Image (tube, rainbow, N blue to C red; front, side, top):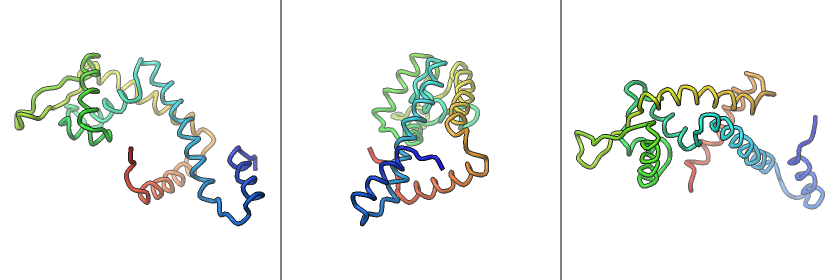
Length: 166
C-alpha cells in the first residue's frame, strides 16, 4: 500500500517514541488534512455561481425544507450552527443578493421568517449539483460500498464527540 504523509509522520513517532499509541492520530490528522482538501473543492465549485460556502449553507437549509422554502430565522440559525447575530448578518447579505427575503413572523412580533426567492431556488438547484460533483471528485477512489462504510464510521466518531464547538 502506498504511504501518505501521515504514515511517514507516524513512523517517525514510532521510531522516536515506540511507547506511544498513535492510532488515533492516524485518523484525526487525515481528517484534518481532508477537511482542507474538501473545503477547497467545495469553495471552487461554488465560485462558478459566485456563491460563498456560507451562502450555500444558508440557502441549502431553506431549500431542503421543501416548498415554500421558509424557516424562522432562529431555526435557520440552528440548522446552520450560527448565532442569531451571525444569522442576521447573513440574511441581510443574502437578501441584498435577492436570494431570499425576510418577513415578520405573524405569530411572533419579534420573529422573522426567511424564504427563498425564485432566484434563490434556481441558484441552489444549480449549486447542489456542483456541490455533489465536488464531493464525488474528493472521494473518487472510494467505491460505493466503501463510502457507506466510511460514512458509518465517521457518523460513529461524530456522535461520540458531541456537537462542534467554536
